Image: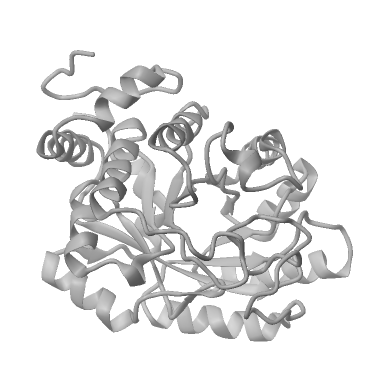
Length: 337
């Protein structure tokens, strides 16, 4: 595939797999240059969305995701905890806002959302957190369209539901729900008018081809996901993937850059696994087009860098945190030149 000097905005279904592979396999410096062209054209590359992820119901999930310490199928160090009280969650949200976060994400270890008192409690909490001026994201498993509508009416702006990996490799990681189940939830979320947050995990034993097929699935969504979290596996004792080797820095950066080129208006988020990355590796990720991170000592149940380290890194790189209003409009505001 012959790349033009300045790549036009890609549309869903624009790239074949071979073309995506060709982009990914460009010389590293050329790949970063192409990603920077896209990032500079469609977004402010100095702005970084800061998010906080709070586990509001932990453990005993009936799914058998091999990477997850919250699965009831595995004996892990994670203790099961019931759904948090609404006041406790809003307290955490207030702390997140005071700490610089513009988005507050609430995660519940459910296979799917069930109507009833617990969902009603979540809806009440969403209203309260939204009234605080934070953008609210939820990730609670599979979701029907009518439930997505209720979340939106309560003030939720975003729903996260990751595809995790390629369709082909997916059965090696999860058997308790299908790939199409995940895609259906994303369709339900989009139909309800919520923004879509969907990404995946690197380092689960998948091939480079699997990683690129994951990106192809995401880039084929119409419209593209508003947020694309890219996670590096954090191996947890007791899970089937506890002995996996970490993804190399350069391969991780290549996936970030490829995602940026394929989905130019999406926020590409550095998610789990940052504790194992040096400041220099994270800087390369920002250079490749990443523009969001999670603040806080934990991502659900896995470690995350200290907030002070994150702010020091942003300062060293001359990057700035987006305020809540900027973050809400960030992926929509930039128009092509």
